[in-house]
Length: 267
Length: 352
Image 1: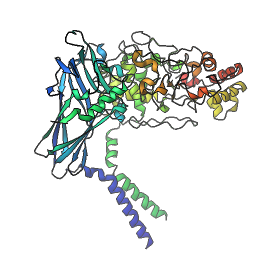
Image 2 (image 1 turned 90 degrees about the vertical axis):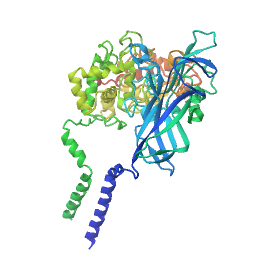
Image 3 (image 1 turned 135 degrees about the horizontal axis):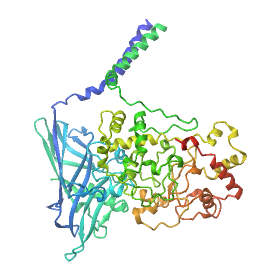
Image 4 (image 1 turned 45 degrees about the horizontal axis):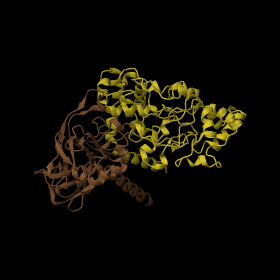
Protein backbone atom coordinates (compact mmCIF):
# COMPACT_ATOMS: atom_id res chain seq x y z
CA UNK A 1 0.00 0.00 0.00
CA UNK A 2 3.01 2.26 0.41
CA UNK A 3 3.74 2.54 -3.27
CA UNK A 4 0.38 3.88 -4.47
CA UNK A 5 0.50 6.57 -1.78
CA UNK A 6 3.91 7.64 -3.02
CA UNK A 7 2.60 7.75 -6.57
CA UNK A 8 -0.38 9.78 -5.46
CA UNK A 9 1.89 12.26 -3.69
CA UNK A 10 4.19 12.51 -6.72
CA UNK A 11 1.22 13.01 -8.98
CA UNK A 12 -0.16 15.69 -6.68
CA UNK A 13 3.17 17.50 -6.59
CA UNK A 14 3.53 17.18 -10.32
CA UNK A 15 0.08 18.57 -11.01
CA UNK A 16 0.77 21.43 -8.61
CA UNK A 17 3.92 22.21 -10.56
CA UNK A 18 1.98 21.93 -13.78
CA UNK A 19 -0.74 24.31 -12.69
CA UNK A 20 1.68 26.81 -11.23
CA UNK A 21 3.95 26.80 -14.21
CA UNK A 22 1.11 27.16 -16.69
CA UNK A 23 -0.90 29.67 -14.68
CA UNK A 24 0.34 32.59 -16.75
CA UNK A 25 -2.35 31.97 -19.32
CA UNK A 26 -5.02 32.55 -16.69
CA UNK A 27 -3.98 36.18 -16.29
CA UNK A 28 -5.05 36.85 -19.88
CA UNK A 29 -8.66 36.45 -18.84
CA UNK A 30 -10.82 39.52 -19.26
CA UNK A 31 -11.37 41.30 -15.95
CA UNK A 32 -14.91 41.38 -14.61
CA UNK A 33 -16.60 44.41 -16.16
CA UNK A 34 -14.28 44.40 -19.18
CA UNK A 35 -11.52 46.85 -19.91
CA UNK A 36 -11.38 50.34 -21.28
CA UNK A 37 -9.19 53.25 -22.17
CA UNK A 38 -8.07 56.43 -20.52
CA UNK A 39 -6.04 59.45 -21.57
CA UNK A 40 -3.67 61.60 -19.60
CA UNK A 41 -3.31 65.12 -20.97
CA UNK A 42 -0.27 67.12 -19.87
CA UNK A 43 -1.16 70.74 -20.54
CA UNK A 44 1.94 72.94 -20.27
CA UNK A 45 1.29 76.28 -18.52
CA UNK A 46 3.02 79.41 -17.36
CA UNK A 47 0.96 80.19 -14.29
CA UNK A 48 -2.55 80.90 -15.63
CA UNK A 49 -1.37 81.29 -19.23
CA UNK A 50 -0.72 78.67 -21.84
CA UNK A 51 2.89 77.72 -22.51
CA UNK A 52 3.81 79.00 -25.96
CA UNK A 53 6.82 78.72 -28.23
CA UNK A 54 8.42 81.56 -30.18
CA UNK A 55 6.90 84.47 -28.25
CA UNK A 56 8.37 86.66 -25.56
CA UNK A 57 6.78 85.71 -22.26
CA UNK A 58 7.46 86.27 -18.58
CA UNK A 59 9.14 83.26 -17.05
CA UNK A 60 10.57 83.27 -13.55
CA UNK A 61 10.59 87.08 -13.64
CA UNK A 62 12.50 87.23 -16.92
CA UNK A 63 11.66 87.73 -20.56
CA UNK A 64 12.04 84.37 -22.25
CA UNK A 65 11.38 83.06 -25.73
CA UNK A 66 10.90 79.28 -25.59
CA UNK A 67 11.92 76.80 -28.27
CA UNK A 68 11.25 73.54 -26.44
CA UNK A 69 9.86 71.75 -23.43
CA UNK A 70 10.30 67.96 -23.52
CA UNK A 71 10.26 65.27 -20.84
CA UNK A 72 9.80 61.55 -20.35
CA UNK A 73 6.73 60.27 -18.52
CA UNK A 74 7.19 56.64 -17.51
CA UNK A 75 6.06 53.78 -15.27
CA UNK A 76 2.39 54.75 -15.17
CA UNK A 77 0.37 53.09 -12.41
CA UNK A 78 -3.34 53.60 -11.78
CA UNK A 79 -4.66 52.73 -8.33
CA UNK A 80 -8.28 51.64 -7.99
CA UNK A 81 -10.40 53.02 -5.15
CA UNK A 82 -10.16 49.59 -3.50
CA UNK A 83 -6.34 49.85 -3.54
CA UNK A 84 -5.72 47.53 -6.50
CA UNK A 85 -2.77 48.75 -8.55
CA UNK A 86 -2.68 48.50 -12.31
CA UNK A 87 0.78 48.99 -13.76
CA UNK A 88 0.95 49.80 -17.46
CA UNK A 89 3.66 47.72 -19.12
CA UNK A 90 6.16 49.50 -21.33
CA UNK A 91 4.75 52.91 -20.45
CA UNK A 92 7.42 55.30 -21.67
CA UNK A 93 6.08 58.45 -23.30
CA UNK A 94 7.84 61.52 -24.66
CA UNK A 95 5.78 64.63 -23.88
CA UNK A 96 6.94 67.52 -26.03
CA UNK A 97 6.23 70.96 -27.33
CA UNK A 98 9.13 71.99 -29.50
CA UNK A 99 10.28 73.96 -32.50
CA UNK A 100 12.59 72.14 -34.92
CA UNK A 101 15.65 70.72 -33.15
CA UNK A 102 18.94 70.13 -35.02
CA UNK A 103 19.78 66.41 -34.96
CA UNK A 104 22.98 65.47 -33.10
CA UNK A 105 24.09 69.04 -32.59
CA UNK A 106 23.22 70.22 -36.10
CA UNK A 107 26.14 68.66 -37.97
CA UNK A 108 23.99 66.74 -40.42
CA UNK A 109 21.58 69.45 -41.64
CA UNK A 110 18.73 67.38 -40.30
CA UNK A 111 16.13 68.30 -37.73
CA UNK A 112 13.65 66.67 -35.42
CA UNK A 113 10.35 68.13 -36.57
CA UNK A 114 8.48 70.70 -34.55
CA UNK A 115 5.82 68.94 -32.53
CA UNK A 116 3.20 69.36 -29.86
CA UNK A 117 2.30 66.19 -28.03
CA UNK A 118 0.55 66.37 -24.70
CA UNK A 119 -1.76 63.36 -24.65
CA UNK A 120 -0.93 59.83 -23.56
CA UNK A 121 -3.37 57.02 -24.32
CA UNK A 122 -3.62 54.14 -21.87
CA UNK A 123 -5.43 51.07 -23.14
CA UNK A 124 -6.38 47.70 -21.66
CA UNK A 125 -7.28 49.21 -18.30
CA UNK A 126 -9.56 47.05 -16.15
CA UNK A 127 -12.87 48.84 -15.65
CA UNK A 128 -13.09 50.65 -12.34
CA UNK A 129 -12.82 53.91 -10.44
CA UNK A 130 -9.23 55.04 -10.16
CA UNK A 131 -8.46 57.42 -7.33
CA UNK A 132 -4.68 57.70 -7.63
CA UNK A 133 -2.35 58.12 -10.59
CA UNK A 134 1.36 57.46 -10.25
CA UNK A 135 4.04 57.99 -12.84
CA UNK A 136 7.64 59.09 -13.03
CA UNK A 137 9.40 61.94 -14.77
CA UNK A 138 12.47 60.38 -16.35
CA UNK A 139 13.59 56.85 -17.21
CA UNK A 140 14.22 54.14 -14.62
CA UNK A 141 17.71 52.72 -14.09
CA UNK A 142 17.30 49.54 -16.16
CA UNK A 143 16.60 51.46 -19.34
CA UNK A 144 18.54 54.61 -18.49
CA UNK A 145 21.71 52.54 -18.16
CA UNK A 146 21.28 50.72 -21.46
CA UNK A 147 20.44 52.66 -24.61
CA UNK A 148 20.18 49.41 -26.58
CA UNK A 149 17.09 48.30 -24.65
CA UNK A 150 13.82 49.60 -26.01
CA UNK A 151 10.36 49.85 -24.48
CA UNK A 152 7.43 52.09 -25.31
CA UNK A 153 8.69 55.22 -27.01
CA UNK A 154 12.22 55.01 -25.63
CA UNK A 155 14.84 55.68 -28.27
CA UNK A 156 18.29 57.19 -28.44
CA UNK A 157 17.33 58.69 -31.79
CA UNK A 158 14.96 61.47 -30.81
CA UNK A 159 17.34 63.92 -29.20
CA UNK A 160 16.51 62.94 -25.63
CA UNK A 161 19.67 60.84 -25.16
CA UNK A 162 22.19 62.48 -27.39
CA UNK A 163 24.22 65.59 -28.05
CA UNK A 164 26.36 66.64 -25.14
CA UNK A 165 25.32 63.66 -23.01
CA UNK A 166 26.97 60.91 -25.06
CA UNK A 167 29.98 60.67 -22.73
CA UNK A 168 27.39 59.89 -20.08
CA UNK A 169 25.30 57.40 -22.02
CA UNK A 170 21.79 57.79 -20.63
CA UNK A 171 18.59 59.72 -21.24
CA UNK A 172 17.88 63.40 -20.78
CA UNK A 173 14.85 63.32 -18.48
CA UNK A 174 13.64 66.91 -18.93
CA UNK A 175 14.72 69.75 -21.17
CA UNK A 176 13.52 73.35 -21.29
CA UNK A 177 15.16 75.49 -23.96
CA UNK A 178 14.99 78.95 -25.47
CA UNK A 179 16.53 82.40 -25.07
CA UNK A 180 16.46 84.53 -21.97
CA UNK A 181 16.81 88.35 -21.90
CA UNK A 182 18.21 90.61 -19.19
CA UNK A 183 15.57 93.31 -19.61
CA UNK A 184 13.32 94.95 -22.18
CA UNK A 185 16.28 96.71 -23.83
CA UNK A 186 18.24 93.46 -24.29
CA UNK A 187 17.86 92.36 -27.92
CA UNK A 188 20.43 89.59 -27.98
CA UNK A 189 19.71 87.65 -24.80
CA UNK A 190 21.44 84.40 -23.98
CA UNK A 191 20.95 80.68 -24.36
CA UNK A 192 18.55 79.07 -21.89
CA UNK A 193 18.83 75.33 -21.35
CA UNK A 194 17.55 73.62 -18.24
CA UNK A 195 18.08 69.86 -18.27
CA UNK A 196 17.78 66.99 -15.82
CA UNK A 197 19.06 63.43 -16.02
CA UNK A 198 20.90 60.58 -14.18
CA UNK A 199 19.44 57.76 -12.09
CA UNK A 200 19.40 59.89 -8.94
CA UNK A 201 17.01 62.34 -10.57
CA UNK A 202 14.36 59.79 -11.53
CA UNK A 203 11.32 61.41 -9.93
CA UNK A 204 8.14 59.67 -8.81
CA UNK A 205 4.92 61.69 -8.95
CA UNK A 206 1.70 60.73 -7.19
CA UNK A 207 -1.60 62.48 -7.78
CA UNK A 208 -4.63 61.79 -5.64
CA UNK A 209 -7.83 62.52 -7.50
CA UNK A 210 -10.81 64.19 -5.82
CA UNK A 211 -12.95 62.93 -8.67
CA UNK A 212 -12.01 59.32 -9.49
CA UNK A 213 -11.16 58.48 -13.07
CA UNK A 214 -13.90 56.10 -14.17
CA UNK A 215 -12.90 53.58 -16.79
CA UNK A 216 -15.40 51.27 -18.43
CA UNK A 217 -15.72 49.33 -21.66
CA UNK A 218 -18.03 51.86 -23.25
CA UNK A 219 -16.49 55.07 -21.98
CA UNK A 220 -13.05 56.55 -22.44
CA UNK A 221 -11.92 58.67 -19.50
CA UNK A 222 -9.59 61.67 -19.67
CA UNK A 223 -7.52 63.18 -16.91
CA UNK A 224 -6.40 66.76 -17.61
CA UNK A 225 -3.23 67.83 -15.86
CA UNK A 226 -1.64 71.26 -15.67
CA UNK A 227 2.14 71.37 -15.87
CA UNK A 228 3.24 74.80 -14.64
CA UNK A 229 6.75 75.76 -15.75
CA UNK A 230 6.80 78.66 -13.28
CA UNK A 231 6.55 76.08 -10.48
CA UNK A 232 9.22 73.97 -12.14
CA UNK A 233 11.87 76.67 -11.66
CA UNK A 234 10.63 78.00 -8.32
CA UNK A 235 13.56 78.99 -6.11
CA UNK A 236 16.01 79.12 -9.03
CA UNK A 237 17.46 82.34 -10.47
CA UNK A 238 17.28 81.33 -14.11
CA UNK A 239 19.15 84.41 -15.33
CA UNK A 240 22.25 83.48 -13.33
CA UNK A 241 21.66 79.79 -13.91
CA UNK A 242 20.56 79.89 -17.54
CA UNK A 243 22.32 76.58 -18.21
CA UNK A 244 21.49 73.72 -15.87
CA UNK A 245 22.69 70.16 -16.49
CA UNK A 246 24.95 67.47 -15.10
CA UNK A 247 27.42 70.14 -13.93
CA UNK A 248 24.81 71.66 -11.59
CA UNK A 249 23.56 68.65 -9.60
CA UNK A 250 21.92 70.72 -6.83
CA UNK A 251 19.91 72.75 -9.35
CA UNK A 252 18.92 69.59 -11.23
CA UNK A 253 17.62 68.24 -7.93
CA UNK A 254 15.74 71.47 -7.30
CA UNK A 255 13.98 71.05 -10.65
CA UNK A 256 13.03 67.40 -10.08
CA UNK A 257 11.91 68.20 -6.52
CA UNK A 258 9.74 70.97 -7.93
CA UNK A 259 8.28 68.52 -10.44
CA UNK A 260 7.00 66.43 -7.55
CA UNK A 261 5.90 69.41 -5.45
CA UNK A 262 3.13 71.24 -7.22
CA UNK A 263 4.32 71.59 -10.82
CA UNK A 264 1.75 69.02 -11.94
CA UNK A 265 -1.81 69.50 -10.73
CA UNK A 266 -5.19 68.11 -11.72
CA UNK A 267 -7.15 70.58 -13.86
CA UNK B 1 12.62 -0.27 -8.37
CA UNK B 2 13.97 0.44 -11.85
CA UNK B 3 10.48 0.18 -13.29
CA UNK B 4 9.16 2.73 -10.85
CA UNK B 5 12.06 5.06 -11.59
CA UNK B 6 11.31 4.88 -15.31
CA UNK B 7 7.63 5.52 -14.69
CA UNK B 8 8.46 8.54 -12.56
CA UNK B 9 10.90 9.85 -15.12
CA UNK B 10 8.36 9.50 -17.92
CA UNK B 11 5.79 11.25 -15.79
CA UNK B 12 8.18 14.06 -14.89
CA UNK B 13 9.08 14.50 -18.54
CA UNK B 14 5.41 14.75 -19.44
CA UNK B 15 4.89 17.35 -16.74
CA UNK B 16 7.87 19.37 -17.86
CA UNK B 17 7.00 19.20 -21.51
CA UNK B 18 3.39 20.15 -20.88
CA UNK B 19 4.31 23.80 -20.64
CA UNK B 20 6.99 23.76 -23.30
CA UNK B 21 5.00 22.47 -26.22
CA UNK B 22 4.65 25.90 -27.77
CA UNK B 23 8.34 26.67 -27.46
CA UNK B 24 9.24 23.39 -29.10
CA UNK B 25 6.83 24.13 -31.89
CA UNK B 26 8.30 27.57 -32.47
CA UNK B 27 11.77 26.08 -32.51
CA UNK B 28 10.80 23.71 -35.30
CA UNK B 29 9.18 26.51 -37.27
CA UNK B 30 12.29 28.69 -37.01
CA UNK B 31 15.28 26.63 -37.97
CA UNK B 32 17.36 29.82 -38.01
CA UNK B 33 17.10 30.42 -34.29
CA UNK B 34 20.47 31.76 -33.08
CA UNK B 35 22.77 29.29 -31.36
CA UNK B 36 24.03 30.23 -27.89
CA UNK B 37 27.69 31.25 -27.93
CA UNK B 38 29.69 29.25 -25.42
CA UNK B 39 32.67 31.17 -24.13
CA UNK B 40 35.88 29.26 -23.60
CA UNK B 41 36.55 30.33 -20.03
CA UNK B 42 40.13 30.27 -18.79
CA UNK B 43 40.26 27.86 -15.83
CA UNK B 44 41.76 30.45 -13.48
CA UNK B 45 39.15 33.14 -14.32
CA UNK B 46 35.87 33.64 -12.51
CA UNK B 47 32.65 33.26 -14.48
CA UNK B 48 31.86 36.56 -16.22
CA UNK B 49 28.65 38.33 -15.25
CA UNK B 50 25.71 37.35 -17.45
CA UNK B 51 24.17 40.15 -19.54
CA UNK B 52 20.61 38.96 -19.31
CA UNK B 53 19.22 41.48 -21.78
CA UNK B 54 21.75 40.54 -24.47
CA UNK B 55 22.61 36.83 -24.37
CA UNK B 56 25.55 35.97 -26.63
CA UNK B 57 24.84 33.92 -29.73
CA UNK B 58 27.15 32.66 -32.47
CA UNK B 59 25.26 34.73 -35.01
CA UNK B 60 25.32 37.84 -32.82
CA UNK B 61 29.07 37.55 -32.24
CA UNK B 62 29.68 36.96 -35.96
CA UNK B 63 27.68 40.06 -36.88
CA UNK B 64 29.47 42.07 -34.21
CA UNK B 65 32.88 40.98 -35.50
CA UNK B 66 31.99 41.97 -39.06
CA UNK B 67 30.70 45.38 -37.90
CA UNK B 68 33.70 45.99 -35.66
CA UNK B 69 36.12 45.79 -38.60
CA UNK B 70 33.91 47.57 -41.18
CA UNK B 71 34.45 51.24 -42.01
CA UNK B 72 30.91 51.48 -43.34
CA UNK B 73 29.82 52.58 -39.86
CA UNK B 74 31.53 55.96 -40.23
CA UNK B 75 30.71 59.21 -41.98
CA UNK B 76 33.63 58.78 -44.39
CA UNK B 77 33.12 55.04 -44.85
CA UNK B 78 36.73 54.47 -43.81
CA UNK B 79 36.84 54.47 -40.00
CA UNK B 80 35.84 51.28 -38.19
CA UNK B 81 35.97 50.43 -34.49
CA UNK B 82 39.22 48.62 -35.30
CA UNK B 83 40.82 51.78 -36.69
CA UNK B 84 41.46 52.83 -33.10
CA UNK B 85 41.04 49.43 -31.44
CA UNK B 86 43.69 47.44 -33.36
CA UNK B 87 44.14 43.79 -32.33
CA UNK B 88 47.94 43.95 -32.63
CA UNK B 89 48.03 46.86 -30.20
CA UNK B 90 45.83 45.11 -27.64
CA UNK B 91 42.81 46.76 -29.30
CA UNK B 92 44.19 50.27 -28.76
CA UNK B 93 45.98 52.51 -31.29
CA UNK B 94 49.41 53.32 -29.88
CA UNK B 95 48.72 57.05 -29.81
CA UNK B 96 48.63 59.29 -26.73
CA UNK B 97 45.54 60.98 -28.09
CA UNK B 98 44.12 59.53 -31.27
CA UNK B 99 43.58 61.48 -34.48
CA UNK B 100 42.43 58.50 -36.52
CA UNK B 101 38.74 59.43 -36.57
CA UNK B 102 36.74 60.85 -39.49
CA UNK B 103 37.92 64.47 -39.06
CA UNK B 104 41.51 63.82 -38.07
CA UNK B 105 40.99 66.04 -35.03
CA UNK B 106 42.77 64.99 -31.86
CA UNK B 107 40.47 63.31 -29.33
CA UNK B 108 40.24 64.25 -25.65
CA UNK B 109 41.06 60.87 -24.15
CA UNK B 110 43.51 58.04 -24.82
CA UNK B 111 42.02 55.05 -26.66
CA UNK B 112 41.54 52.30 -24.04
CA UNK B 113 42.63 48.74 -24.84
CA UNK B 114 39.80 46.20 -25.08
CA UNK B 115 40.79 43.19 -23.00
CA UNK B 116 38.54 40.76 -21.13
CA UNK B 117 35.57 43.05 -21.64
CA UNK B 118 33.07 40.37 -20.62
CA UNK B 119 34.15 40.82 -17.00
CA UNK B 120 33.94 44.62 -16.96
CA UNK B 121 30.75 45.49 -15.16
CA UNK B 122 31.63 48.58 -13.19
CA UNK B 123 31.34 51.23 -15.87
CA UNK B 124 33.25 51.93 -19.07
CA UNK B 125 35.08 54.91 -20.57
CA UNK B 126 37.95 56.24 -18.42
CA UNK B 127 35.47 57.94 -16.10
CA UNK B 128 32.76 55.27 -16.07
CA UNK B 129 30.27 57.46 -17.95
CA UNK B 130 28.82 54.41 -19.69
CA UNK B 131 27.36 51.45 -17.81
CA UNK B 132 27.82 48.69 -20.39
CA UNK B 133 29.20 47.96 -23.86
CA UNK B 134 25.75 48.21 -25.40
CA UNK B 135 25.37 51.85 -24.34
CA UNK B 136 29.01 52.68 -24.95
CA UNK B 137 28.70 51.92 -28.67
CA UNK B 138 26.53 55.03 -29.09
CA UNK B 139 29.45 57.23 -27.98
CA UNK B 140 32.11 56.60 -30.67
CA UNK B 141 29.44 56.07 -33.35
CA UNK B 142 28.05 59.58 -32.90
CA UNK B 143 31.17 61.52 -31.82
CA UNK B 144 31.86 64.01 -34.60
CA UNK B 145 35.62 63.35 -34.53
CA UNK B 146 35.40 59.56 -34.14
CA UNK B 147 32.91 57.88 -36.49
CA UNK B 148 30.53 60.82 -36.93
CA UNK B 149 27.44 58.81 -37.79
CA UNK B 150 23.91 60.06 -37.87
CA UNK B 151 22.19 57.27 -35.92
CA UNK B 152 19.02 57.43 -37.97
CA UNK B 153 21.01 56.72 -41.17
CA UNK B 154 22.30 53.39 -39.89
CA UNK B 155 19.32 51.07 -40.57
CA UNK B 156 19.08 52.15 -44.23
CA UNK B 157 22.83 51.74 -44.61
CA UNK B 158 22.59 48.17 -43.33
CA UNK B 159 19.52 47.35 -45.43
CA UNK B 160 21.52 48.40 -48.48
CA UNK B 161 23.92 45.51 -47.96
CA UNK B 162 22.54 42.02 -48.59
CA UNK B 163 25.22 40.41 -46.39
CA UNK B 164 24.21 42.51 -43.41
CA UNK B 165 20.49 41.96 -44.02
CA UNK B 166 21.11 38.22 -43.75
CA UNK B 167 23.40 38.51 -40.76
CA UNK B 168 20.99 40.73 -38.81
CA UNK B 169 18.15 38.35 -39.65
CA UNK B 170 20.14 35.37 -38.36
CA UNK B 171 21.30 37.18 -35.21
CA UNK B 172 17.97 38.84 -34.39
CA UNK B 173 15.29 36.78 -36.19
CA UNK B 174 12.01 38.53 -36.88
CA UNK B 175 13.29 41.94 -35.82
CA UNK B 176 13.97 44.92 -38.06
CA UNK B 177 17.55 46.18 -38.32
CA UNK B 178 18.03 48.83 -35.66
CA UNK B 179 20.80 50.82 -34.02
CA UNK B 180 19.91 49.03 -30.80
CA UNK B 181 20.51 45.57 -32.28
CA UNK B 182 23.70 46.79 -33.91
CA UNK B 183 24.91 47.95 -30.49
CA UNK B 184 23.99 44.57 -29.00
CA UNK B 185 25.96 42.68 -31.68
CA UNK B 186 29.03 44.88 -31.20
CA UNK B 187 28.81 44.32 -27.45
CA UNK B 188 28.57 40.55 -27.93
CA UNK B 189 31.68 40.48 -30.10
CA UNK B 190 33.68 42.59 -27.67
CA UNK B 191 32.82 40.15 -24.86
CA UNK B 192 34.67 37.44 -26.81
CA UNK B 193 37.97 39.33 -26.53
CA UNK B 194 39.53 37.13 -23.87
CA UNK B 195 43.23 37.32 -23.09
CA UNK B 196 44.49 34.54 -20.80
CA UNK B 197 47.24 32.89 -22.83
CA UNK B 198 50.35 34.71 -21.70
CA UNK B 199 53.51 33.23 -20.19
CA UNK B 200 52.24 34.40 -16.82
CA UNK B 201 49.05 32.36 -17.37
CA UNK B 202 51.03 29.23 -18.21
CA UNK B 203 53.01 29.77 -15.01
CA UNK B 204 49.81 30.33 -13.08
CA UNK B 205 48.37 27.08 -14.44
CA UNK B 206 51.34 25.01 -13.29
CA UNK B 207 54.09 25.46 -15.88
CA UNK B 208 56.62 26.71 -13.34
CA UNK B 209 59.44 27.16 -15.85
CA UNK B 210 57.61 29.68 -18.01
CA UNK B 211 58.79 32.52 -15.75
CA UNK B 212 62.48 33.15 -15.06
CA UNK B 213 63.88 34.16 -11.67
CA UNK B 214 63.76 37.90 -12.33
CA UNK B 215 60.20 37.64 -13.64
CA UNK B 216 59.10 35.69 -10.56
CA UNK B 217 60.66 38.38 -8.39
CA UNK B 218 58.74 40.94 -10.45
CA UNK B 219 55.50 39.03 -9.91
CA UNK B 220 55.98 39.20 -6.14
CA UNK B 221 56.64 42.95 -6.36
CA UNK B 222 53.55 43.48 -8.52
CA UNK B 223 51.47 41.51 -6.02
CA UNK B 224 52.74 43.66 -3.18
CA UNK B 225 52.81 47.11 -4.78
CA UNK B 226 50.42 47.09 -7.76
CA UNK B 227 47.72 44.57 -6.96
CA UNK B 228 45.76 46.68 -4.51
CA UNK B 229 44.37 48.21 -7.73
CA UNK B 230 45.54 45.94 -10.58
CA UNK B 231 44.05 43.00 -8.72
CA UNK B 232 43.14 39.40 -9.45
CA UNK B 233 43.55 37.51 -12.69
CA UNK B 234 42.04 40.42 -14.61
CA UNK B 235 44.79 42.67 -13.19
CA UNK B 236 42.22 45.38 -12.50
CA UNK B 237 39.82 46.03 -9.64
CA UNK B 238 37.61 47.87 -12.18
CA UNK B 239 37.44 50.77 -9.78
CA UNK B 240 38.33 54.44 -10.10
CA UNK B 241 41.37 55.95 -8.41
CA UNK B 242 43.19 59.25 -8.30
CA UNK B 243 46.73 57.97 -8.81
CA UNK B 244 48.36 61.35 -8.30
CA UNK B 245 48.84 62.46 -11.89
CA UNK B 246 47.52 65.95 -11.07
CA UNK B 247 46.80 67.86 -7.92
CA UNK B 248 44.40 70.58 -9.01
CA UNK B 249 41.12 70.18 -10.80
CA UNK B 250 39.69 73.66 -11.35
CA UNK B 251 39.65 73.39 -15.13
CA UNK B 252 35.99 72.84 -15.97
CA UNK B 253 36.25 73.05 -19.74
CA UNK B 254 34.92 70.35 -22.10
CA UNK B 255 32.01 69.51 -19.80
CA UNK B 256 34.26 68.63 -16.89
CA UNK B 257 36.69 66.47 -18.90
CA UNK B 258 39.55 67.18 -16.48
CA UNK B 259 37.52 66.29 -13.40
CA UNK B 260 37.98 62.53 -13.86
CA UNK B 261 35.15 60.42 -12.50
CA UNK B 262 33.90 63.43 -10.57
CA UNK B 263 32.16 64.62 -13.72
CA UNK B 264 29.95 61.54 -13.53
CA UNK B 265 29.43 61.19 -9.77
CA UNK B 266 30.01 64.76 -8.46
CA UNK B 267 31.63 63.18 -5.39
CA UNK B 268 34.73 65.03 -4.17
CA UNK B 269 36.62 61.75 -3.64
CA UNK B 270 36.33 61.09 -7.40
CA UNK B 271 38.25 64.22 -8.48
CA UNK B 272 41.04 63.10 -10.79
CA UNK B 273 39.98 59.45 -10.50
CA UNK B 274 40.11 57.20 -13.56
CA UNK B 275 39.35 53.57 -14.21
CA UNK B 276 42.12 51.05 -13.40
CA UNK B 277 43.28 49.58 -16.72
CA UNK B 278 44.34 45.93 -16.85
CA UNK B 279 48.06 45.14 -16.87
CA UNK B 280 47.49 42.35 -19.39
CA UNK B 281 49.30 43.02 -22.69
CA UNK B 282 50.59 46.21 -21.10
CA UNK B 283 53.86 46.06 -23.04
CA UNK B 284 51.85 46.25 -26.26
CA UNK B 285 49.43 49.03 -25.32
CA UNK B 286 51.70 52.07 -24.84
CA UNK B 287 51.34 54.97 -24.24
CA UNK B 288 49.74 55.03 -20.80
CA UNK B 289 47.14 56.78 -18.62
CA UNK B 290 43.76 58.30 -19.59
CA UNK B 291 45.53 61.01 -21.60
CA UNK B 292 48.46 58.91 -22.79
CA UNK B 293 50.92 61.19 -21.01
CA UNK B 294 53.51 58.47 -20.33
CA UNK B 295 55.22 57.00 -23.38
CA UNK B 296 56.85 54.01 -21.67
CA UNK B 297 56.38 51.68 -18.72
CA UNK B 298 59.60 53.12 -17.27
CA UNK B 299 57.86 56.52 -17.19
CA UNK B 300 54.86 54.96 -15.45
CA UNK B 301 56.97 53.32 -12.75
CA UNK B 302 58.96 56.53 -12.28
CA UNK B 303 55.67 58.34 -11.71
CA UNK B 304 54.69 55.95 -8.93
CA UNK B 305 58.20 56.14 -7.49
CA UNK B 306 58.77 59.89 -7.51
CA UNK B 307 56.01 61.78 -9.32
CA UNK B 308 52.82 61.17 -7.35
CA UNK B 309 51.13 64.48 -6.53
CA UNK B 310 49.20 64.79 -3.29
CA UNK B 311 45.62 66.12 -3.21
CA UNK B 312 42.62 65.42 -0.98
CA UNK B 313 41.27 62.76 -3.37
CA UNK B 314 44.61 60.94 -3.83
CA UNK B 315 44.12 57.18 -3.41
CA UNK B 316 44.91 56.01 0.14
CA UNK B 317 47.12 53.16 -1.12
CA UNK B 318 49.57 55.75 -2.40
CA UNK B 319 49.90 57.24 1.09
CA UNK B 320 50.59 53.94 2.80
CA UNK B 321 54.35 54.05 2.39
CA UNK B 322 55.57 56.79 4.70
CA UNK B 323 55.66 60.56 4.52
CA UNK B 324 55.96 60.97 0.77
CA UNK B 325 53.10 59.83 -1.48
CA UNK B 326 53.97 57.09 -3.94
CA UNK B 327 55.46 53.59 -4.01
CA UNK B 328 59.02 53.02 -2.83
CA UNK B 329 60.79 51.03 -5.57
CA UNK B 330 64.51 50.42 -5.95
CA UNK B 331 66.16 50.35 -9.35
CA UNK B 332 66.33 46.57 -9.21
CA UNK B 333 62.61 46.45 -8.24
CA UNK B 334 61.80 48.44 -11.36
CA UNK B 335 63.87 46.08 -13.49
CA UNK B 336 62.11 43.03 -12.06
CA UNK B 337 58.64 44.54 -12.46
CA UNK B 338 59.33 45.45 -16.08
CA UNK B 339 60.57 41.90 -16.71
CA UNK B 340 57.38 40.47 -15.23
CA UNK B 341 55.01 42.83 -17.09
CA UNK B 342 56.39 41.51 -20.39
CA UNK B 343 55.19 38.03 -19.48
CA UNK B 344 51.59 39.36 -19.57
CA UNK B 345 51.78 39.63 -23.36
CA UNK B 346 49.40 37.18 -25.05
CA UNK B 347 50.56 36.59 -28.64
CA UNK B 348 47.49 34.64 -29.66
CA UNK B 349 45.23 37.45 -28.45
CA UNK B 350 47.23 40.06 -30.38
CA UNK B 351 47.22 38.03 -33.58
CA UNK B 352 43.47 37.48 -33.87
